[in-house]
Amino acid sequence: MKKFHITRINTLKGIFKITGHWQQTPDQMILTQLEVMSTDGWQVLELKHQEVVKLIKTIEQQIFSHLQAPDL
Image (cartoon, rainbow, N blue to C red; front, side):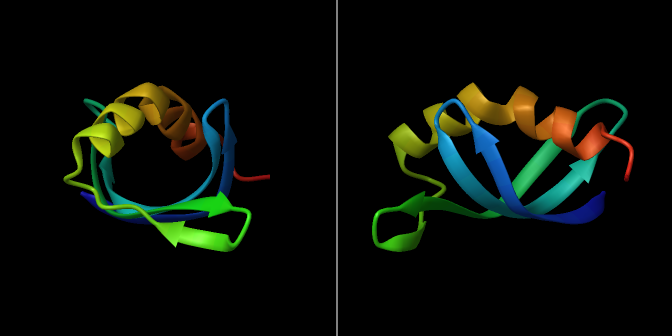
């Protein structure tokens, strides 16, 4: 798996900073850190929390699309 770090991704659920490992074929991802932009700045989310797991499932296609996009 290839390590990745997204410094900022805008989604329908908010703005996130994401670090993890990714494999393109088939699409697989392991997040090691997820942060959300809040009114007080970046807030680290607990990856094992049930609501965060649901959030990840909701935005994972946007993350995969971001990772697969060609570098500009």
